[in-house]
Image (cartoon, rainbow over all chains, first blue to last red; front, top):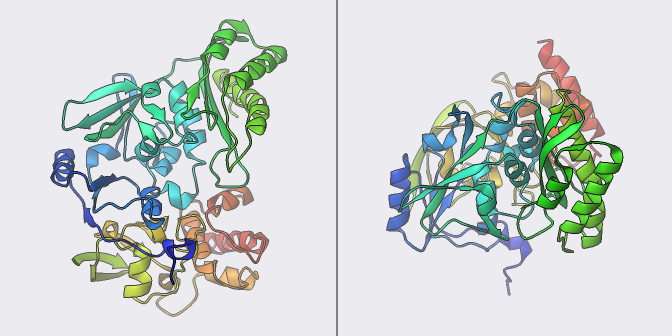
Length: 301
Length: 158
């Protein structure tokens, strides 16, 4: 008897409709017409895999790919605006980000593989809300806000309020993430991101982003975020407060790393153990801090 | 219910009937009988199914077929020139011993094509990063990297 086992699941496909609306209004109206059995599809690298693995069974997919305003990177009112459907590869190669949002570039350049990055979107990455999502820590430390739209009014919220749990976000059933808004950082600041993985093109065992505002050898202020150490990507505000206004030296950063490793709540899972994550958090924090520090000082790294 | 889509495949305009739930890989292999593109993991991890859509390398096993409407698709079958000559990348793979069982090869070549189109003179690190989405169980990658370097040189020298 045939079992729905691994070897079959990657080739057996279910039936579904595939709609390609050209505007947001059309997409939302399509979604409303198919209540309950329709799902939005962004790049699809996560969703298609889920369908083939039998985890998702939509009757209708509504593609967001042809909605022009969702695919733009623009500048407005001193803020960078990234449409939800911008691919990681587009961000990786974008001249609008280089030198200003380096932590974000560090992250999106190393999500999956080129084939994935050409298709997978930043909006999709955030809405999937894996605790290991690489785009999250840099967006957290860059003080981003996200715009949601749906059947009711638009709303924006700080990205910190968007992640609710493992694969859970603040999106209600009728909402779509449309844009990520990132304020341009001040002069004398820098950001960086690193991930710890087993081999190339892997999901993070632990990742970390830091944003620093620097004056000489003083850390005027900083923001720190970790992923894969809690149900959601998190800011480490105790360490941020600890470092604020202090003169940076090795002993200080080592203490900060120790503090961070005590703040995080990692678990043991298929990718790593809680002990390893705690241990490595000190090292990765230090490495990311110094990378952001150099950039804040105007040195390229 | 089948839908009609039109796109450019290996420089030829075609119109085909597809089921909306098909992947691009399914269309290529099962419907168009272009078996050069290989199914590997089915999950978008191994790269054996790599093709170019609008000149970008993608995993066809998780690419919704409806999204190639009005697009340009290039498969391994499209790498051979109109005169029947192997593309310089294909030649380099053969000459450098980068083909053992050959299963990863079509995907490797398409990914290499995308890499060299964007970056005609890549460093070894850039080659390895660009091909990180293509797994090979036979070669250990050394000859593959050398083939891409050699192909890059051929293409730069015309």
